[in-house]
Image (cartoon, helix red, strand yellow):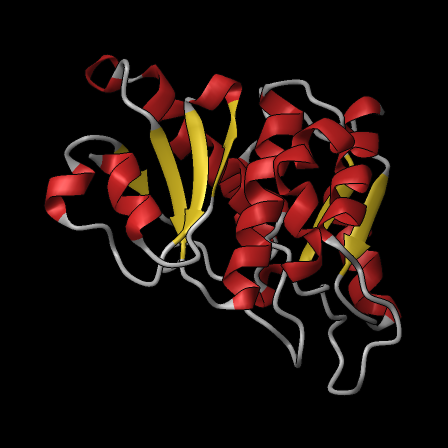
Length: 212
């Protein structure tokens, strides 16, 4: 019933990982109750929000990727959902589709141990439909950063152990990413501390005293 409903929507496509157990679909609205009862559907469109500066719209940050992954992993481990497909869905707006694709492929790299090419393979034929990410400026972006570019960067960071979700402190990450708490994060724990923007030298010295 679930598959029939999805295929009945004009132009709908589903994309799958993990032997078909995990799927992504872009929907114009929430699935109706009779369809949702045959599978597990979840969305993060209204839960994990990218707060833009100007024309930027993503990708979502590491803390948001962690929370998305925790939600998906919990569904996969839920015995009540055993045998049911897990559908991650987003709205049809190009920005939401692009951010969703980056999330699900990033999850596949981290938890299925796929390469960027393998993780992005389900989207290979529709890759041109994803909007390139825009830098945090109000002018035309001169470089289109793609979902695949971000996946390559994530895979490299994973290989060099720049982050580890087994020990990742998402509450600390989200605390310090707030402007009032420094708007900063570690690029590599204990080595590279990155600020979102320029800070005066006395503020920098204060942060050095706290963190180092």
